[in-house]
Length: 460
Ligand code: F0G
Image (cartoon, rainbow, N blue to C red; front, side):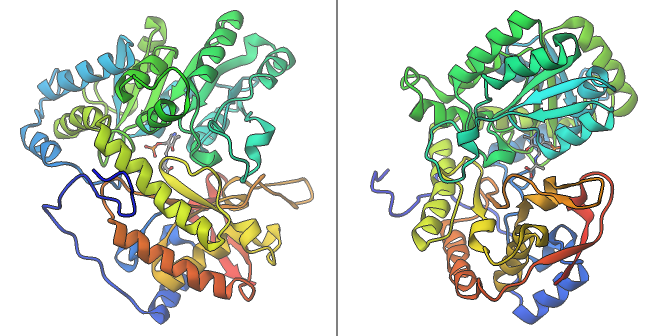
């Protein structure tokens, strides 16, 4: 393959197509108004390029589709389960493997057992469903990344790392008996999709051992993280991506995976662990709420496709294309003068909306304004990762804003080609032209948890 990389050559050819519908700007304005200015509430048929999430939106390979046909649908002890269990045991090195229908089901099971009032969870950054599942049990979730990594512009190789200077202070402050678990999210989705270094997880392991704490790896993008380690962390140049992932997973006590990301499937999740006593408790909850221990809410065909996906995702050509194509969007946006979180992460490009829309105050949600403008101008759907997602209110009802106002352009795996991404780049030219006239939003409806999914907005 060319090393010049002017053109991204997708390492696959297309065997099946799904038509995209172009719509007019007037049509999209109407659709967005009807959706309460919340793109989560749009019909996907009204979306041209869907960058809402990289979760469950990828394209499966011919081999995975063949696996769908040969999946074993037996209720118990299915062949497809045995295949999946074998692959996951090999990947994680953990003996207890529980399938779930998606990541948050694994989170609910594990964190409802570990959590409860007065318990504390510490993470580099809790993803929103992680935080919600923890807070739902009455426990507290605390995020600690290094202060300099919170600067969207500073160029550091592992901005997803946990702040290991703060961790011992928190352990002391809350008492180690009250720390339910330490969770390292790789890559760190809510903080720009930034990678976590092996050194950070190794050191974390040490601190957990010293304090007898459970270390959970939330590794739904573990393969993408391995790419960054191989290319940025000394000592891993000659490792395969799979070897790097295996080494990292062996540092954890438990592993949670939304397989909808690096499992390369449209549905699925995993919860694995080393401790037998904990696994029995989890299996009990799994059976009550998800399904029997050999399918956990998945069809046999889903498990077959996942077993294949978990091997394919470590393919060197695939991972190179994956990380480079995300970087292609980010680097070209930066070259246009669009402020983006730097360096570009693995699964998404994060635009700094506070900076781009500096005329919109934070309590008028500049990120939501950009999300709406991208849909109106180009039919592009993406998500705000700022004060809509993470904002809280003080006692007087005043917004406590999130540290950053970002907009995430998440790239589905193996779905869009370079020309789709070039179209997205063109739409940003319109955004740059209109940036000073655009207005903010206010919230007119919001639920108690995960408000960004269903909130309604009004233009100010
Ligand atoms: N952990 C992380 C780091 C995630 O990114 C997600 C999902 C989950 C857990 C929950 O998994 O969706 O299968 O229940 N992230 C998606 C996203 C939704 O768009 O980033 P799930």
